[in-house]
Amino acid sequence: MKKYCVLLLLLVSMGSWAQTDTLNTLSIGLDLMTHGETCGGGLPRSDDVSINDDRSHFLFGRTRLIADYSRKGLQAHAVVQNKAVWGMSGNQSLNLYEGWVKLTANNGLFVQAGRVALAYDDERMIGPNDFATAALSHDIVRTGYEGHGHKLHAILAYNQNGDNVYNGTYYDNGAQAYKTMQTIWYHYDVPKFPLGASLLFMNLGLQAGGYKEVNDQTVEDEVNPPRTEYQQMWGGYFNFHPKYLTLEGSYYRQTGKVVNEDKYPKPIKAWMASVKATVNPADSYGFQLGYDYLSGDDYVPVAYGGPLVMVNHPEIGGFSPLYGSRTKFYGIMDYFYESAYSNGFTPGLQNAFVSVFGKPTSKLNCSATYHYLAVATELAVLNRTLGHSVELQASYQFSKDISLSAGYTQMYGTETMACLKQDGSSKRARWGWFTLAVSPSLFTTKW
Image 1: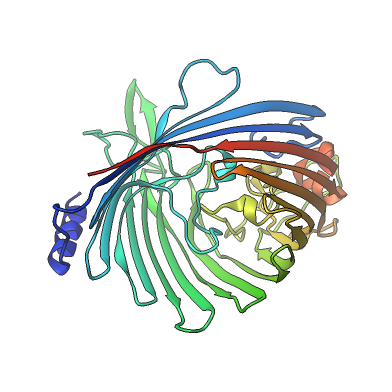
Image 2 (image 1 turned 60 degrees about the vertical axis):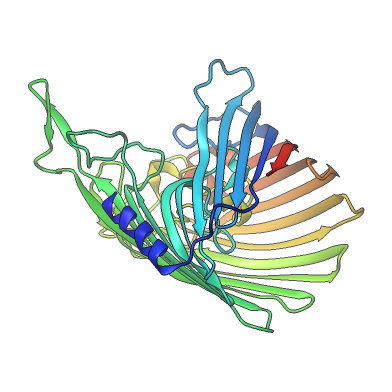
C-alpha cells in the first residue's frame, strides 16, 4: 500500500491537477443482457468432466447498474453486476464488476485506482472477454501518460483472499489467477500515417506451495512451502490501416515458471504469432483472412480409445492467452482454451481462417467464417489436424440501446480431436446462441 501512496504523491507533484470549481456530470444507466445457448455433441464449456449428453440448453441473465461521475481532472466509475442462469435461486453472483477513480492532469499524466475492466490493442492478451458473460476485471493501480501520439501505461496489482493478519501473504483461489502483476504498455501512432504499434510486458507472480494439517494445526509444507513464482510475457502488436485495407500482426513470448495444479512450478518457454488482413471495398461488405500460431507441449498419444501416455516435460511449451478476449480469435466456441484437453495437455493451436461479412441494411450485420484448426506440436501416431469449424453470425440494432445478435457454429472434428479430448462427441459438435442486449441511460444531470 505504501508504494501506491508514493505513486499518487509523485503524480500530484508532477502535474497541475484541475480545481474542483468546474462542471460536474452524473449519469446512471442499466446494461441488461439475456443470453441463450443450445449445444449438441461435445460441450465447449465443460472443463472438469466429459459430458456426452447430445443436447443441452440454458438461459443466462446479466444485469449491470452503471454509475459515472466526471468533472475536469476527475472521473469515477462503478458497475454492480448480477449474473445467473435462469432458475438459479439466491444472489450468489452479485458482485462489484468495476469501481475506480481516475485523476488526470493538464499535461497528460493520469493515475487510476480500483477495479478496472482492462482492454489493450486487439484484446488478444488483455481484454474483458465480455462474450463469456462473467467478463474479466482487475484490482489495480494504473498510472501513465497520454498525448502527442504516445501512450504509456504502468499497472500494478497485489491480490489477497482477505485481510489476514497471519499467513496474510498467501493467495489461493482468488478472483484472479495471479497474486501480483506488473505491466507496462506503450503505444505510438505515427503522425499523418495510418500506422500504430504497441509494446507490452507483463510480470505475473503466482502462488506456489502451500500448507498442510498436522495435529489439527495448519503448518507450512516443508517439501513444498508457500512462495511466489514469476512468469513473464512480452511482445508487440501493430495495426496498419490504409483506405480499404487493415493489416494486423502480433508476436509474444512467455518465460519464467508455470504453477501447475499440484503447485509444483515448471519452467515455461512458449510463443505465439498472428497476422490478419481485412479488406473493405465498400461499407456494405468486406473480407478477412488470417493465421494464428500458439506453441504447444510435446506429447505421445496412442490411438483413440486407449489411454493417453503423458510425458514428464522438463519445461512447458504451451502458450497461454492469459487474460485476453479469446472468443474473438480462436472461434466463438472457445473450444481449445476455455475447455481443457484430457490430462491437461496443451498441444498448442494453428488457426487459419477466412471470413466474409456484410451489411444488408443500416441496422443488420452478417458474417460467415471458416476455421481450419490443427495442433502446433508433432504427434506420434496422429496427424495434426483437429478439424474444421463453420460459424454464422448476425446482429440487428433496433435502436441505439437495444440489439439482438445470434449465431450458429458447426465443428467437424477429426480422430485427433476425439483422441485429445477423450470424447467421441467432440467430432460433431454444434452450438447455437443468441444475445439480447438492452442498455438504457436512466438519467444524466449536470451542475
